[in-house]
Image 1 (cartoon, rainbow, N blue to C red):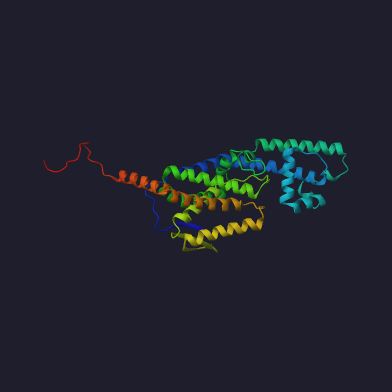
Image 2: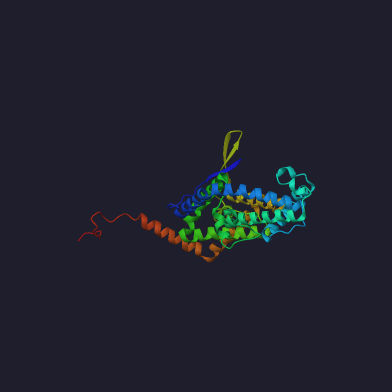
Length: 326
């Protein structure tokens, strides 16, 4: 397992308050939502399983718009699973599966479907993931932003925040406390848009800061291509450390994400295209900042503030300094 642990020759000139605030906000949102999402997910999966089983066994039944869209998305993205449901191979996976294949009357089956559709709509209405995660097939405008602060597990959060710390501290020091957060959020929004295009119609909620963090990685490559990134390789409980320049490591990571996105065809638990979109967006935006002169102005402003804070106090008495003998 490869883990970046730092970088050489880069030291911030002041405390990265914005990066710290972003990490704190992501962590606070995670702690406030994680257990609720876990509980709701279990209930939602149970309803979705019964809905898919009944729809596969009786495709002639009428469904609500939300339920129909969900079933269609599963049929498009996992046809083998749906085919198995229709053949009866997956009937044992759902306690309701056997009942849907018995000789029930059409009216009873439709009543069962109506109940499942109402339950599905209730789950969608109250679910944190459905309302605040980004669902490409039924997106809310605000979900492009809110999904960036939700995470699906501890490792998901920890790795995203660690990469945010590694890249964010230096970029915040370079661009200042106004450009940096705007850049971060814009990369996250653009990453979500790319994921939406690649997974158009998907009803699986996407969440996490990885798209925005990938944007910081793209910007880091543009801004500090020769910087050596310290890596640690964990192998059989032993740690091996070595350095790799950013211009070699980061394009390799992008190539792996691009390959994974193409190979999975969008049918993956990892939003590879969001990573690709965020990385490319971050690199292009960083080039734009440099070409526009905004980066240079921000650098000068940060330098001026740092130099001002480093200016020694005049005197404890508050009197003006002497300008030579009188």
